[in-house]
Length: 343
Image (cartoon, rainbow, N blue to C red):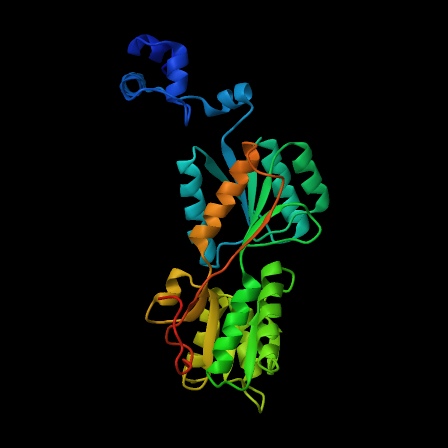
């Protein structure tokens, strides 16, 4: 037979304090003296006591758990952002419950329904969209939702993204000023706001300089699809001399295809620019010029927005777009007189 678990009353007796004092010690943000906290924690350690978070949530109506829905982790941007979100929420007394979902409406809605069943206090979706029906149900249940690195038309949900449109315009200006004439774009998935906004900003930036997009392909945010697109582009008579790739994950596949499959020099034969600035982009193997997503500021804004709605200190929803710098490295021709804003 297993030993009987200690409860908060046992801890209170061992520490010589009230049961409510034990509760305050284990409640994030509660007012309690350092001396009291030390006494209670010492008694709890001796008895092997840990508070029952789920039982407390039934009493308080708050689980202090945030549900995170993410479609895939192959893109190196998301594991890094996930760690930052988890750490930021932990500092505020919350924890993350991660659910993986297929990147389609039915799969996401199913996972979201499961999160509602877990009685989470709030939900963050990372690059997935949810239906209007489920948005209404979350609102009815009093569970706020914040979209991270994705916006969505037609729903009244908070969203935090980098300024994808402005960032892509910077890349267009950089490539035009570098003297490139046949500028291609391997876009992100057309079904995502990030893919559409980056493509729109890039086209607008080229148009502003009286340039046309040489060729555009939907890379589906897939390394393999992007690499295949490069092979098709370079079968043509008029080959690109620069490629803006919709994220770094695809850009790595593009560079590998250019260098190792086609025997081309980057940037001697063709310049490559990505978007995200994941840690791998700075490795000497890639040394990728890319638009940095300001993930620290995006995470901070996401957590502030979500917890503000949970705690009733913020409005129902807002759209936040955060500008990021172009990080110039070694994969693209650098225009004369260019000042690197990432320094």
